[in-house]
Image 1 (cartoon, rainbow over the protein chains, first blue to last red):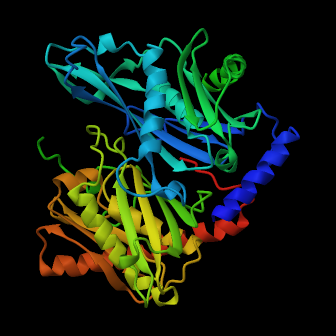
Image 2: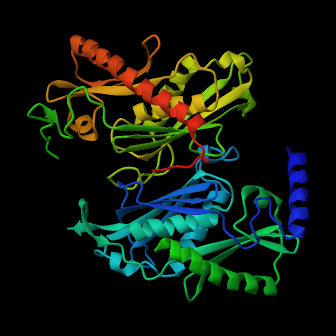
Image 3: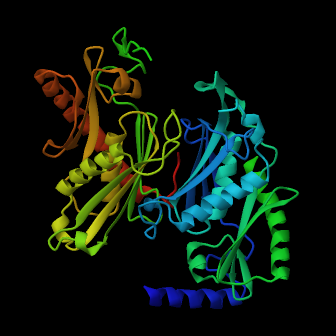
Length: 257
Length: 244
């Protein structure tokens, strides 16, 4: 298996050095993107996103929660991710491993730092706030779960209905209108191989890359960045990838409308 | 909550007759990486099953020198129910269901053909609406067949319950919660053998007998849908993808 990985990595790099990719895309193109809104009506919000062969389901639930001591007047946002074992022969059962935790935290940071959800409006009383739970279920994996999960999380939030709260209790059968969001966060992930950068790496490309960078943006701001892998990026590289992320962000945002 | 009336004017709350199934939709081969997969919508239940194997059995002390180890994992997404957000990690309920579902397929898979390997069946409940284990067994059987794993039969499952004193096929969530009994059954339709059998609540001897006969009749219908789903894999031209 290691020999195969080594060979496929070499082949991939030779191809990329000539400015081409195995599936015929150019360096800064996404695979086909599909968004199905509200596939799980039991959840307050949900979305199923396909990015090429990667398919991710995100569900949003509300519950009554305890406020955090350092933010007593704010609701609680909690993001989880599971690399469900049916999604890939490389995923295993058991508690979330580091990749799943990183995925959840990167998506969480984008949503949280953008302030797109007004968590102050989730305040109920001193003891109680509304908690919003965003769960990322990776169902079929062929690389770049960051962008697919980011898109699915945003689409699920955009479809979410607020539950009615009365006397500190959630009344699930009644809706208090749509969840208000101030901006759409989208993420762009690039793989680095030698001196080339590829947007939206497939799983084969991820296996052959030196490093990865994920950049989350709103229309005006960068709201989260995560670099992964051992490869290094120059300042110039990063600035050009930030520019591309803003341009690609527009494309992704138009799909969310 | 007070128990609602479950049967009104001879019809069930969702308008069904006593021996009607909810609408069932089965799609085989919806995932790209899994060796076999199936997606089942059964009423409001949405269930995805994926199969890997036969592949190397890890850890090795679990492997058998004479047959493949068959393992099913039943898991509920934390957003699958109308109620509160689910807690992460397997519950005692899902551990039990994983065990009894594994045992169903240990019976029908010709596991002697693949010594030292394991066959893994992963089941994700994406939306739950009563009767998830039966929908899960039905989905898993299709996923196994889609993976090309040799089996003695294509298993399916359905529950019978008792609501307002009457036997009802394929209990809804309300009938499950407020009814007098729930009896999920998995069947090997070729010989009618019972491979999963659970029951709670109170039934008489004759009610169990009649209930099992209802299950046998329903199994014929579910089997036909499973076979049709598998046939469609070969008639379909597009790449596998989930349509929820």
